[in-house]
Image (tube, rainbow, N blue to C red; front, top):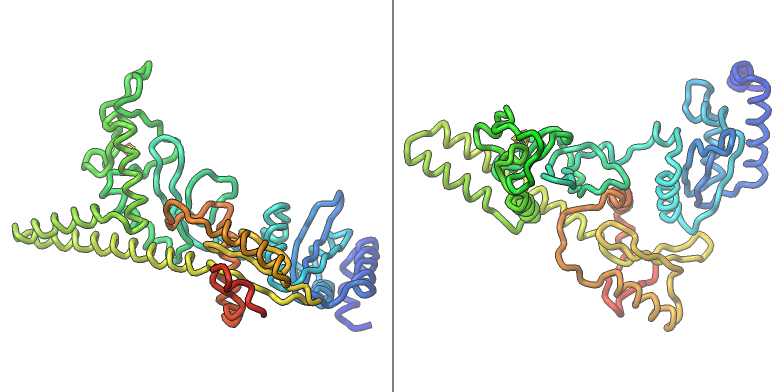
Length: 377
Ligand code: SF4
């Protein structure tokens, strides 16, 4: 017995050791080196961890070799009572299934170990009265808010967003601030005439909390902010440029320089959005992935999300059926924006990172035009 194994035997309680050895025996006798996902289950069936690999057996064995208690893998193996796995057609299929299972069960050890949307910055547009635009890290599933992103550099993003909020008079205060629109029925207790908020005093916020603006007027500014982010509306930049030129003409060079910096931040925000829209739109195609056992699958991907998947069609009838699904997925929509629903963000990040890590896989994609689909892998 190796010194390493002796050390582990000393530290694991005998019952845990026996359970661990029983699970290891099952893996050694039953698991194959095929793509798939696996689960470690604890007492009462709690899913402790979900993983994926292109070789399930090898991956599971590495968990069992980890040093206890230093390594997280070894600690979760010590806590697990059961190990289970399912094979998938390919590593890509395993990645998608892993993501979906993690989202469904939120296993404790995945939360501790995974990199996910929390590592990116997003602009979040809240719902409810007087929506607010603010920068957040990650997203929450089942959130009715609209997200734009992902972006790197939360600090720069927040500075640019501050300019947009100021230019359009949008609020940036705490979400629980009570709103009181000008066209709202009077409250039993009259709202204060000023909120004691510097942004209102210096004309940077329309004041939806003190009845200084109607709901419709405020909503129109929110709509303008979305149009600005979508690159369809330049008014905040135009107004700042005019103010800058007027300041220069009055020889107020310091103020003109401040306004120039504001314009630059807004332009940078708009160009970040243009790049984001392009990146998201680029992730739109049919991706055919060879199966580990000849079970090839075709994925219809639009705007960074798998919208439909099926066995890769091989007969004219299957091809016609598949092409009709592709046509449904790519039916024209009223307007594309940079907005990504909260529940789609993790899959967008997964697909972006997959094609960044394996650029050669783009060779297996085809544009979603009828007649050019399902190019053979
Ligand atoms: S004026 Fe009112 S709504 Fe606007 S930022 Fe200040 S507290 Fe918020």
